Image (cartoon, rainbow, N blue to C red; front, side, top):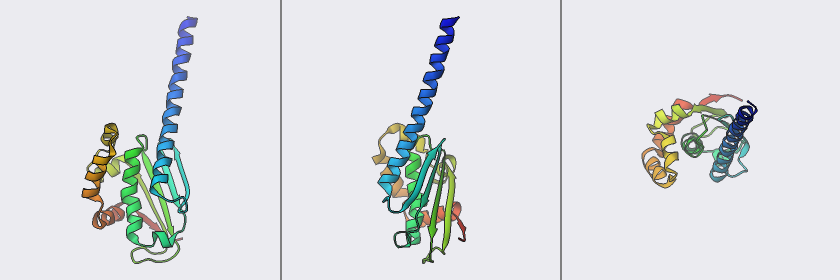
Length: 165
């Protein structure tokens, strides 16, 4: 009986260690992808917890001044994050603007999107791409099909919300 209890405790312990390792790996992948995608001078904060990634941008009208730059963050970088972070389930992004641009008004632009929503929009299973562990073909296929001003604008209209400061 004592052996069974000891084995059970060990199994539970290793299960918890595995869960913690997966959470840390998700956070590491999330942080690495953000660091590769953006200068630290435009990120106010980033957080990854229980499958939810949150990114708050600083007010950087000069960098984010064109509407398409913002659309690219929402449409393309979010796809990259879902591709590179297997346990990312929900992504929240907030981008503030302090002045009007050609496309966007002064205010805060936010997006909350799930893996299912983004995979449905792009008609791609990002999790399948993760198993391949070779991002180059995926990236080329994705960029050719979806990285255009028109598609980014459509994505933003569907998923991005606006609020005045």
